[in-house]
Image (tube, rainbow over all chains, first blue to last red; front, side, top):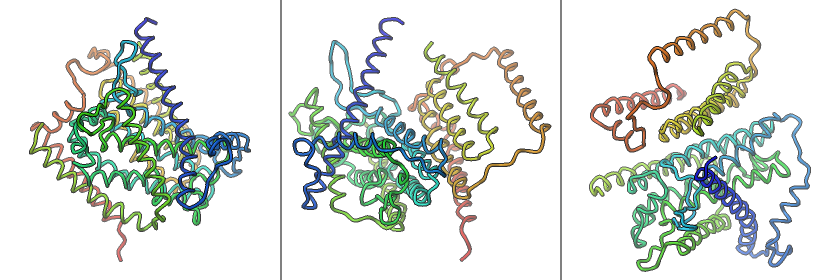
Length: 342
Length: 163
């Protein structure tokens, strides 16, 4: 194996290791932040016993889950039951592999970007992998041979299809403005002041995206797949121990993915948005991190604030409000882009 | 070299999973094997330098259509099919498959076809859009859209129960 190829391979492996490590860390941290923040919103304290201000709680949770018994329901379809968490986590990790985590930078005499794969069709790839992610849910719901799990799986997948349409349509205006599916190009199309960010230029698309993304990751107010009072825990009712942890991990990674996408597509990615304030190098990473952190916090905030939708309301809202709004906005954006060719 | 290795791995996976689709008696497993086939085909499209078609393959077939198949299988609770009647039909099927394979191979050899995309063929996303929306194909493309819309309306009309 020759030098350059080996070097490329090492870089790719390092990137993959870094991304997966960072994601696992962020996932662990998010479970704690979410519980703490939610507790403060409800005048409680939340987990504050393990380590200073409770920051070691995720590790304690991990150890606990690791030593719990794995229960396989007697009537379950064994292979499908084992495959479901793997499908869920794999698709979640694949989706986040094609997004950049910061501006391009130079290190060791090389032009680098913290991104595992820079695809020409990056956004479409995420859409495709997201579509495959439904199988994790469907499999989990079906394989357990439990009526709550099956109903939860059906609900969850129906919800994901319905809101996937609105999600995809909300991207179209952004893609047309950038003239590319590549996420780096989309970020660059928003360079300049805050006024050139898509959240300002394409505000209706941002609204549709945010609502649809919340539904895609099944967060409150769209957490019907896990409606505890009706379905116990939905499609992952029968999962225990590390498989339960994997299911949770897939959900949190999906949440991080939609937050990162919201930042790149609508909030200007790593651009500072203020003329004169630098957005290259470490500054870029800082802006990017702050924006993603803010969106993640909004998800927790929503959870502490809103009640859950009813199922018919959910379907009505998705098909009769969100998709028409997104479709009309696509026409408006197409007209604007056609009239002002770059 | 790398391309060839990836190609053979996924080509083998595609053929094997396609065999599972027809050999498996449990429709649920068949459907999943078909998803694997479609995803392997998508990798081959990507290798041929057409990421757009690769991704569409996954979105449309593996993502949208197969989920509907799975829903039907799950909701109707389709049981595993009983073993078929006899070896004669299976043998006939295998023979037909072999003959088709032979004809295709012979065609490849006789026409001296080279593997990979035709020379000068550019399947990038931008180029594909330019070709699809060029005057040459625009009307065909739009007519296909209308056809799909008609099928959609038809499906809704058939599924709608009389009040």
